Image (tube, rainbow, N blue to C red; front, side):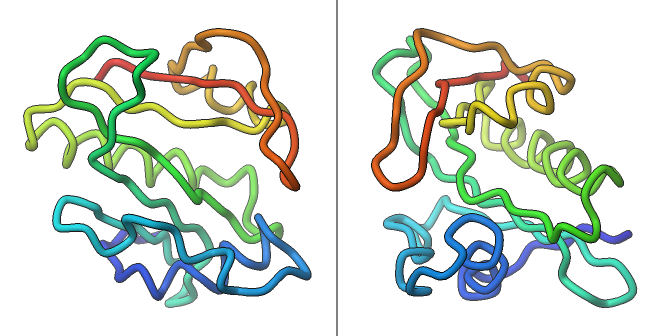
Length: 144
């Protein structure tokens, strides 16, 4: 496996397949994808992009840190799950985020993925909430 920085457009197909199946690909083009401090990572297996994650310099008012990064659009091809792809993306991102003098990463995690995030050291904040047309989530964060 190899983790590389990728362009926003490289994330759309996998985001669509995993996070918004059967919906228009335009729903996988997120605001901020091309902002100056946003970065996108991809995990490759045998030169095939099998996992993606995007990181935005964006604050959540429920967290007190002045500077924050947000994880969004993490998606792994179902044939490559439970092989450490997402963990590798996050570990690479932690290094980049720290180099930007930021110590916190947060996300709106699908309730079904809580166990994954907790294993990596994320904590929940607040109650479960619903994102329309997507499902139940929790605000999660990790100090890095």
